[in-house]
Image 1: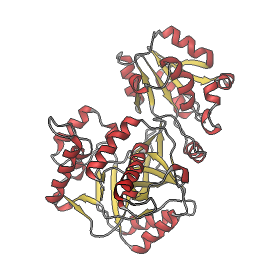
Image 2: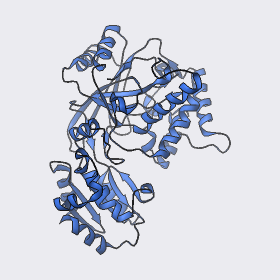
Image 3: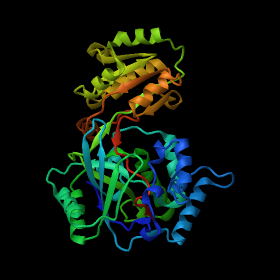
Image 4: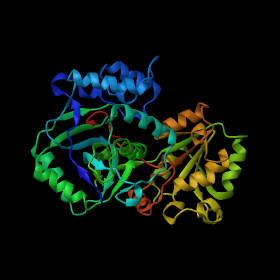
Length: 426
């Protein structure tokens, strides 16, 4: 089961901060080149300069990040808390359907363990290239700037009741609105008895990674690397045996999962007519008006619903049961995975179109906003797109408990956690 503990966070020093939102950033993996430049211009102390820097003309990028982090600490722009704490957070936002939501969770340290122990469950495959970048940054800085996003079951409300008590009875450290339109509030929980209640309750629970698989696996690999270097063992209580983690109750009403759509380019011998004919063999296709089609996909019960955009046409598609049964690669998958739309998309659409999955990133862009997908296909930047219905939290939990994984970018948990609010440095 999960082993968590409070920690003394490295944080922006409130007396030196005029607007905390100007110093924070989205997760590195969703920042565009244009957005990175804007974050740089926003403040000379924006955390992007350390967590996701623009490569310098000379010198090692990761070592420069470490030097800048040291400089900010020396200037006391960043200071380490005097007492260990668990950090309680709320995100207030309006979801894609227009409903107001509040997601409540907490940030603490989690002992990294191999997935085989079943204390921590993944649900997605990862890209090796992304892990290499995060590993180099961790080696240089010995710091984690953005929590891994996880969920857990709190059916007895032991954790939720403590978090509610903190929110209702204490003043927040920060309350601000960020670029994504989300209002964020954070409290520091330092009372030993309340911390002990959370730690004890979590020790009886498993944790499921929602977002941040690359960072978790990087932390796990770094832990082993440091054990070899320092002569420690995994069971020791070394600081590098922990990862910065955000935890949210899977029953929380503010937990939103969005799909990540696939925009395709450089499809070999692409022809709109040939692609439609190929899809018709294995799918029931219904041509629809664009907005109606997307709405239908998002609201179809279950998680097999998909749509394709080819040229100026939209089709809602449903895989034929006999086609699923006849697909050898799908039938090799576990029952928890093979009937999900993300798996059907990969095995019955992407592989035939691209010719395999070894070079996915050369052909696919993963985009959350349907409007952006449409515009980029309509402009000719991409040849076609595949829209997916959201994977449910229950499908995700079943897949993880079965020790199975979905294709990359199967889920998008919204709102994203922002970088730099609390930092774990050791």
